[in-house]
Amino acid sequence: MEMAKYRTMMTLLFSIGIFSQVCDSDVKCRDDSGNEVDWLVFISVSLGIFLYKLPKGDDEGLSYLYMDEGTRGWELSKKTINSKSGTLANTLKPLLDFYDRKIEGFGYMLYNDQPPDPYVAPASFGHSKGVVMLDRQTGVWLSHSTPKFPTYRSKDIWPKSGSINAQTFMCVTFSYDKFKEIGLQLMYIHVYSYDSDIPKTFHNELRCVAQRSCYPKIEPWFRVTMLTSMKGRGFSSFAKYTRFRDDLYSGLIGNYLKQNLYVKSWGKMHDPLPSNCSIPYYVYNVKEVRLEGKPISDTVDHSKWCVTPVGGWTCIADLNREVSQMKRGGGAICTKDFAVAKVFSVIITRYELC
Ligand SMILES: *[C@@H]1O[C@H](CO)[C@@H](O)[C@H](O)[C@H]1NC(C)=O
Image (cartoon, rainbow, N blue to C red; front, side, top):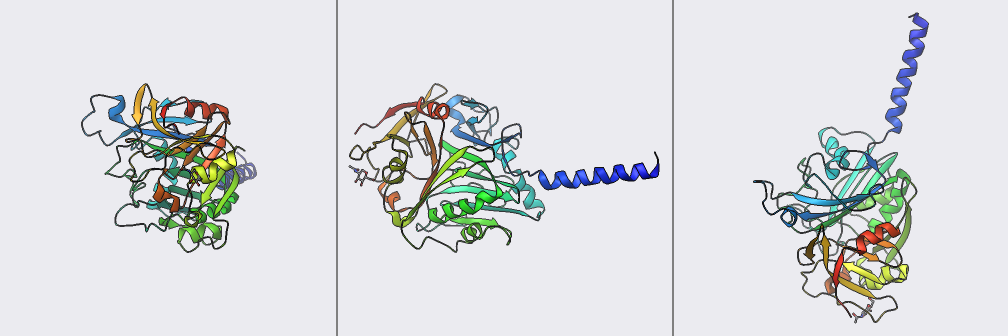
């Protein structure tokens, strides 16, 4: 090859290389095969519910029923939740890589009202659990219900004390600019951030939450906003601050969605709020769901979600319907999709009448 041609070609290859490095963000929600997805939801369930005999040493693993924009229904994953190649590990890979080697232009925040030891979250912080991870192009907001997850700076992200109760997870991929708004929602929830590294040039709304240095100062003590995902799906984010002093479902979400709500929350509580039919839109407590043909009572189901079977809304949420949690910050991420709402509605087998 002539020298000039060779040079042109090398320049071209080089610039393509740099170009794709800049535009190809890794920070996206990912499925079990590592493919990018716009959004995903899964419910983790104790393996013992589906299998009678557990493989030795595998009893800490939870199986999960997975759904994303392409599955249109639950799929029982072939992996366990602590797998190094499942949806959780694939999605959190940029964070685990960052533990090895700091990459410029990457930021993250881990928050949990039940953080891993030795951290302890005061009750003035929100009852909320999640991961925010982003670079200059895209990021993910992963909202979940698992205590002590993710572990503190360890590649074994699943806590050893791994809860045997069912849990919910929702991940949505957003463009970088949406994290200003996400930061504000997290400020209202007043999340307890136990680990973070957010570059100084990133949104201040997110940085101050990561540093636990901001909180809402004026009424109203709640915030509702619309967030559009990378692929253009609308998500309504509900957030209430501790001073809101009402139940998330009967006091906020129902009024906005203008639909009766069926709420799945933790069934082992001190002072549970009963189903409520003294408000324009009724709120019912779901007592049992059926997954893969197996009944799961709310006493072993720590997942938190609600659905409006008629209106087509589904929310993955932070809070239980309990008197003491009226005083806690917390929120929910909701989307309107009749197919998704149906998938959640049909698993409800028992709920508390008013
Ligand atoms: C029903 O919900 C509303 C709004 O949260 C609350 O003010 C009211 O006390 C509740 N009623 C009952 C019977 O729980």
